[in-house]
Image (cartoon, rainbow, N blue to C red; front, side):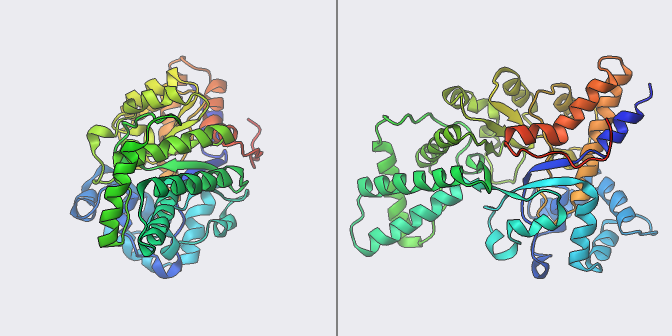
Length: 406
C-alpha cells in the first residue's frame, strides 16, 4: 500500500521536545563522553562496551553522512570529524534540520549551571520560545541545605522548626513555578534516589517519620556539608507536595522511569510501583519518561487505564534499536499522550530524531499496509506523537509551523 502521505508527515511535521537538557557551552563541549548519544551507561560500560552495539553502528553510519565522511564508517572517525567542526556551527547543523519547534528544558541536571547554556539561548534553533521544566529534588536540596546552614550557625537545629520552615519555603517555591508562564511542568528523579514505590502522604499524616529522617540528615550534613536527597521518607514527602501543587496549577509532572544510569535500583524503577500514587492524585498529570523501558508493558497498561497518565517515548529509540519488539508495542498502544523527546545535552538531536521517526514510520506504515489502520488515522497518530499531544498536555497553545497540507 502506498504510504507516501504518511511518510511526508512523519518526516516533515514539526516536533515539540518535551524532555531535553540544555546544550553545553562551547568551552565545555567535551565535558561528557560523546558515547552518551547511544547509551545511558557510564564508565567502561559506556566508553568501551556501548561502541559495540547496534545503536552505535547505526549512529556511526548516519553521522558519517552528516559529516560527509567518505571513509569506512568508524566511531573514531566520527568523533574526529565532530571535533573539527566549529561548535556553534555543529549545534546549528544538528538542531535546525530536526524541525523541533519548541524545547521544554529540564535545567536541573547536575553541572548545568556551570557547563550549559541558559534555556533562552536555545531559542535560536526553534520557532517557538523555549520553556522550563523544574526538577523538584534540586529545588528541595537548595532550600534544605540553606536552612540547615542557618540553623547550624545558630546552634538551634530542631527537627520541627526545620520541617516547618522547609515545607513553607518548598511549597512557596513550587507554587511560584506553577504560576510562572516560563515553567510548563515539573520533574522528579525519585527513581534515581529512592525508587518509584512512592508512599502517599496526605496533608494530615503524622510527620514524626519525616522529623526523624531530617534529624539524621542534619547530623550527616554537619559533617559533610553536602546534601543529596536519598532518604525515602523525605523524598516521598517532597514528591507528594509537588503532586498536589502540580494538580492545583494544572502543570504535568514528569517521572524518570526505567531507562537510566547504573545508580538506579532496577527492581524499584517500574512505573507499576506508582499505581497507588497515581490513583491518589487523579487531577495531576503524570508523564512517564523514556517509555519506562524495560517496563514498557506496565507503562502501556497505566496509560490505558488512567486518563491522567501519559507516556513519553523518545530517548529509548537510539538505545533500543530493534524495530518490531518493544518499539512496536509502544506505538501499537497509542493513546492521546505519546510525544517525542531527545534528551539533547549537546549530543546529536538530528541523529536521535532520525531514529525515532524511522521507528514511527516503519511501524505505522506496516499497520496501514495490514489494513488495521487507515493512512489518515496513522497521520493523526504521527501529528499527535510529534506535536499535538505535548501542545495540549503542557498547555503551550502553539500552532505547528508546518508547510504541508495533511
